[in-house]
Image (tube, rainbow, N blue to C red; front, side, top):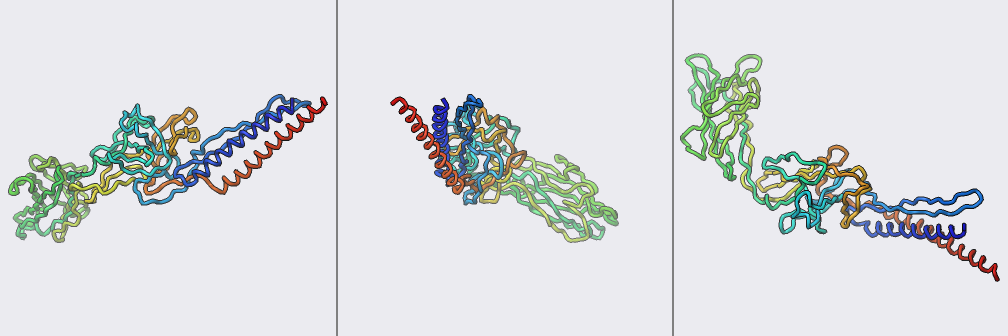
Length: 434
């Protein structure tokens, strides 16, 4: 009976508008929740028994969903581990039970933004108990080959293991001009010494002393220098390495290195321009320059000038803070100025972001509708860059929600009016028997 179908359709209308009202209430309640993605409802008509002479109302159905792909505005904060994504993608996290699980057993969840801080064990987590996940870096700060289509290689980020750190020196760069007049036959042959500080494997400061002695011929100029190295961590009177450097004096590349003759126990790599020898801590390299190049050691008609001398490594330092860059590298910053990469935070993406399963605390998990997850380097492919010192605001717009609230209220009242009308019509039908 068409009157019955009208009643059923209006009851469906009441139900779907009640569902929409629930999403509006949720959106307004979370208008100040960081990382909240607004909920919405999609209405679909239902059609049954459509004939020209008789029309039966099919009604309406509702499908609720989260607009996960929507982007909220980013606001600046004072916390370096407040993390957001400037574009598409999600941050991988796990719950408190996943901290002690293996990668294959751990519950994998995702956040659009998160305010992380270290707990009593040094794990970075939100106040709601979600722990940040990342790929651990090696001692050299590099990330090894990792699986990008699963979370098996991800581990909870822990910064307490890096409270103190030291980095030994492996490379010394020498940018020095040696005076050309010192190799003339009339020169006095006095050597030039240059002490350079380096750091051993325990973070202690040691000294390498480079001594440059001109090789003087009976007449003219040899353009050759004998270089010896003394390690202050060992015998200060014994040379640990020695090599000879000859410089060009032609029109094309005068003053540049012509040849290097390494001494016993050391080597010279013409490609990198480095000599390598052993000190008390182990092997160390010194950049002196490539053949024919003007970087490194030069011999020009100018005074002895160490214009660019530096080295890598750092002494032992106390952890001051952790920061994350746009590529997702989480670095420890020490009071000595040394920075060390601890983890790389990838950005998770799925084919259908709106198909993710919504969980508590603005978290999401993979579902059948979302498709499989893939982990990108931040700022590459379709995903955005990671932004530190920032949180994402709720995607709820209060004005829009209040407008939708008015529409929903009117629609609900109209459907209720249909129920009342059908009731009156059925009453008239009943009265026909009287």
